[in-house]
Image (cartoon, rainbow, N blue to C red; front, side, top):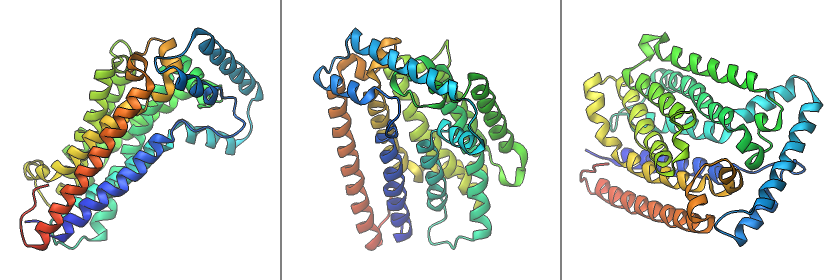
Length: 340
């Protein structure tokens, strides 16, 4: 039976997670003033031709990016604080923020309705799920950067590998250490582990590898890339962390899996939201994607059309979520049952 606790937690889950994932997603390609970055000018060119860029535009972007790499590489070592900043940018912080927020939100949502949540259970539950998840997150985003260095020199020339601030060898060592650390933590402390957490870590790592690595490299196909993002952002993360938290609250493995139906609302919302992410993430990247054979939706049908479609889908998703929460709130206030 649903109550106001469920409705309120569901509202918090959607509102906070959407705000912190959608915001950074739309701003993910921002670069600091003064960076060697031709992309603002390229964006203007793209706006005038939704089908893509001309050869001259791509060549200019390549030349500017190559010059930025040479200048950055020549700068050499600039101290530990700079190195820490490079590593932080390599981790793609906007993705870390999304993961760091969804884990406590889902952990709260998985609590039995009306039950008091003990900090002695909740804090270790959240921290133990968060640390390996963030490490696997860095593995996935770092691996993508390793295989996209030529593309990123055009699209995102201030990223550490593309700019030359981090060598490919250091990048490879970083992602391997993060993968090993994340998976090891999934098995290191059995009282805090769960099959659901392990499945989430392993599934995310496998799909992230398939997304970036040849010969599979799902990102070359816009449909397969979208399905990959929807699977991870929609089903895997939401179900996995929900079931992990349910086990921590005392449910058996089978019961926790069955209780995952309560997560249908977040799964549906973030599957649609993942579709929006899959559409808009490549809108600013037409120059490099077209140059290196990544046939994204933006390359195929044009940036303007993709952005319009994504905007409409996001609006419809948020409207549907608001309507569902309104119905759920009314049902909870009236003592009715709420299935989401």
